[in-house]
Image (tube, rainbow, N blue to C red; front, side):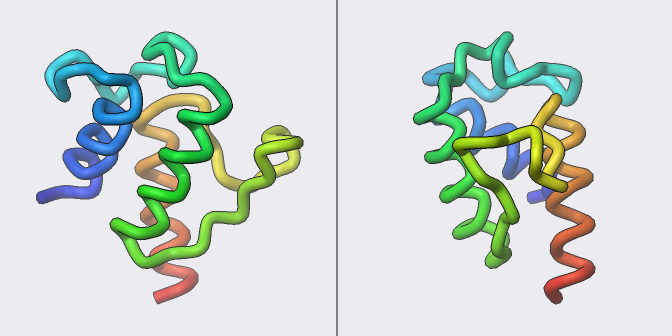
Length: 85
């Protein structure tokens, strides 16, 4: 399973959507993911990819982890895996 497929599955589960309803261009806001869902998604991503995500839920704008879209999350995961792997 590709990184994109895994992230889509995680995001879809948090948003209670079918994975086919989640596209790389989707934003978490469009998918109805609130701040709690975001934190749960981050935890699920850390577990699934065995990485530590530098994300502060209290101040998401200060993070290097781009959550602006599903595709940007995948790019951030790939970068972190390269750095931490």
